[in-house]
Length: 105
Image (cartoon, rainbow, N blue to C red):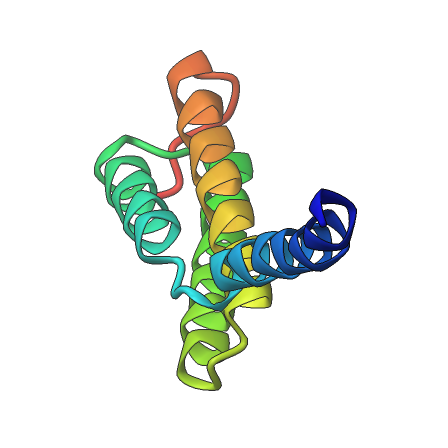
């Protein structure tokens, strides 16, 4: 009897694990969107040079794309775009802090 219980239990556990992992991708990327917005706000507040301004504009474009995909319930792509927006905003901030380019504002 234990062998047949294992034959039933293992597929059920595997299925439950799959459903659990799938649920992660169906959740809206709330934290990622918040992180991207905050990073962009900080970068905007900094004195940005031309190169940083281009990077900041790119971050804003990615955030807009993430918001659109969020509205379409394409959470995986929205998450990816939000993460990219955050990374580009951080890069813009680093460029502005390095003082390597002339202020653009």
